Length: 269
Image (cartoon, rainbow, N blue to C red; front, side):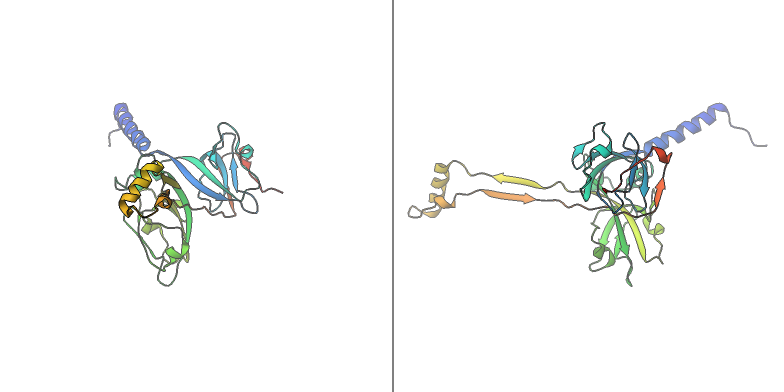
């Protein structure tokens, strides 16, 4: 007969198992752009602004904690008291504590943009309508977008960038699996949740000339004494800007916990 494990052996096994699970757990601050639909945002939160219910198709997840709306920290207030009911879109920052997404991120190369310290992470929901040539999207074995076929279905979708990380397919998290194996080859429509390290922007740099006398003196050296160059003294403006994306909404709702504890954010009558 097989020997039953001793208490010390069982404790050691459970300790290592729990330690492995904690190691996979990550806490992310995600930037999400959400549209208001005809029936509202489709989000129900509890008193701590933790999401308890969602309409289908949301890039948000049950358990996400909303901490900022349109650049304003909620700071102990309820979400319903912070949002502007007439606004068509909202820029949310949510805290997500997730073990599965941690498994996905640990497969990435160490120099990937989403792993950089203080990276501004966006999560987007993108749907590709397959054509006769397929999805038009190339992924690495660790679920990073490495190719977007010119004129293909993914490019027409308009949301994919190189280096995006696929974290879910058709609403199911990838974890340590390959996204290629989660895509249904005979499906006309495939939905992706993607993680992106967004560029910082907009940034404006202004280069000011030195004092007028020094500037005119320098310009005369370059142009000659007979030329009036004072009008050439000017200010240079250089600007760079970053992109943004948005999350789509669906209709059927799903709930977590006691539905009565969720506070739905309905559309303005």
